[in-house]
Length: 108
Image (cartoon, rainbow, N blue to C red; front, side):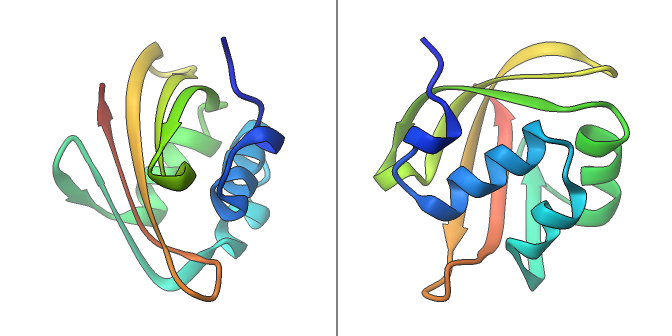
């Protein structure tokens, strides 16, 4: 069963999932701190390059299956035009100001 973004516990993470699914790059970037970082399968990546390739240039979509850690850890069926669908884990670090300073993703 998929958890819709509006039902996720952390409002910042919920907004990020909604932005991915709406292909709203500006909305996605507005949720990040200016110095945000990310990793994919344990390797730090260039954030801008990665989100272009893996999300916005390839029609990325997140179907959230489970959440934990107050909504800051998700298991997602993620799909895009480059790789098809895969089960992925996402972990978010959210600042006191309600912005994401880091996210980590990889196969679940």
